[in-house]
Amino acid sequence: MNEFKLLIDGKLVAGAATLDVINPASEELLAVAPRADIAQLEEAIAAAKAAFPAWSAKPVRERGALLGRVADALEARKDEFARLLTREQGKPLSEAVWEITFSTDIIRYHAELDLPYEVLKDNATQKIVRQRMPLGVVAAIVPWNFPVVLLVLKLAPALLAGNTVVAKPAPTTPLTTLLFGEICEQVLPAGTLNIIVDNNDLGGALSSHPDVAKVAFTGSTTTGKKVMSGATSTLKRLTLELGGNDAAIVLDDVDPVEVAPKLLVAAMMNAGQLCLGAKRIYVHDSQYDRICEELGRLARELVVDDGLKQGTQMGPLQNRAQFEKVKGFLEDAKRNGKIVAGGEALGRKGYFIQPTIVRDIADDTRLVTEEQFGPVVPVLRYSDVDDAIARANNSEYGLAGTVWGTDLDRAFCVAAKIETGTVWINKFLDVSPDIPFGGAKQSGVGEELGREGLEAYTQAKIINMAK
Image (cartoon, rainbow, N blue to C red):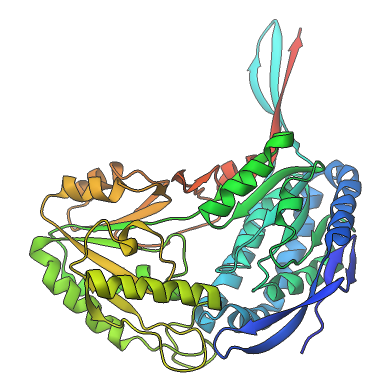
């Protein structure tokens, strides 16, 4: 086993305790990770606070150049990171390679950005300029479904803007974050980035700490509300990317054979553990039986296995708690709907669930109203598209959605009525570093990526000068 270390004040250090990390494909011990205590958390925050003046004083182009070196180092070790990611998270190796590659792209995109003064008004009597100032110490709290990409899309803009960071990965997937810390220890000034690992016991202290100026959190809506509550004492800035129960609306002019494979990918990517995944599929009466049939056939053909094995298309769920939760959704689906494919956990070691398609299920069942975060998707019938839109919008969530149809003008009109932060038409998960995303309703606060995402790590200051 590799020996993993925390990163505190530019040094790789042992934790006050340790934490077992389990391979979800085998349920066997993968590694022993260092676990921080409250004293080490305080050290990390103090180090970030002490590093802030010098880091924020560096010209933005110098900060960008250092981020570029981090991206180069990550790319050079892409295969090592991808294999470790598959072993700790469970996703197929091809998906892990995509995550590391996209993470590198995000860092490089931010490395080239600038934060120039913006002249808002300049005339004979006055000059008004907007300046973007860094905030201070940023807490970056990352979940277990995409531990690398959701880390760097916080770190890159935060650091480029001149902030320092304390990052906390999920306790079930800390290893790739700690490995990333080894890269940064060689490139970034001491204290600029600090990485601590906990057992879900230090998040409250981190997010409520008076020396933390902003919290960037990705995770469940329930935990996001706790983070928001903890931030109130000092009115911290927040970026929250929270849960989603994303709807796919399939119009009546699609080719079922053509659209079904795309719907399956949208529902089953990362074993359904994707905030932006298709969690509910609404299909017109005229296409309903055929699409259910196609989805069922494709689901039965998916190769479910250890993500490191050649040919694996879907891996296990990431942890036992999520495995047990999704088994509860399977029982709900059996009671209230008709199982087209799947419906069971695989009877072997590992947190494996069969890709499951459920039809003829009511809108008020758990599988439809809650976020399942697993490879179990309901397919719902509609006869009027306005009814489908209303049902899709009848949710406390509003992260993303998809519309599928041949008539693009019609599909656009449907997309315009969906109450989410992002809607894709005839595609899924088309994300790029320069396009912002964020959630509506209880799916989040603020935006990530793009210039908007960068500016979220700054305080706007207006300088108003008389002439």
